[in-house]
Length: 355
Image (tube, rainbow, N blue to C red; front, side):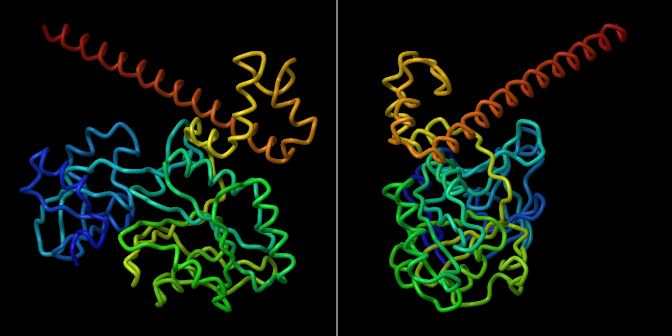
């Protein structure tokens, strides 16, 4: 396959030429397994690792390759290569790393569209959809809402769910599908474009792997039986992988996410909760927290029923998470700086003793 079939474009090629990378192979990371990568190139599929220099210069997880990245590499054997550079990313979808102080977890890179996948059974939660939307807006990725397992609800119930989404979330496509009957798949396929990269964001058991299998026309990802007690498929996907579909689009399957922590939601929150942000411009105080201040336009609109209470609560919770993450990052950087000074002082003392 040509690099263009994986999304290679003029911007990537321009960077390659300007940075004198013509002597290196170019490929796209299609899967990752604990810092071991699979990369697609024009010559085929290769197993790859990063160079020691790239590892040493990395300041955080975001400086390592992720699924979707374009990389430059040298081929050392028929099926092994070393990654030297990560080419500039057009988009990065990330979240707070679970259980890691002030750290970021990359979900995927160079994504054009994200399917926000939720089942219409007990998993359905608009607050979670708003979280996914915030991540997409912050990442400059266009979202589409995909509702699965529609065969478990009647038409009236599905219509009510879609109406509840449209009431809180405007101007985002909503596609209802059934993995069992294939209803809605034609509409979904019509939205997918050749050469564009899509990823799926959703909890475990909402049908992401089955969705990928149905779109690809083959059993690429293993799926387990539905649990009778929860009406959910058991969690199977354990890694991220980019698949090229027959229609020329590319789709990344992600492990289910139980926690969706906001990393940097300044623009993302503004786009997701645009009505609240618009009202906040009329608040009496520029540093209004929209909780109890006199002259707060947001609280006033909430009291009049112009803002949905659940949407306001969701916004306030994510604002607190964003602030907490920012303070966590600042504290971690302060500790890193202090540690660096301590190491430097130790080395200076060692050198003095030698003298």
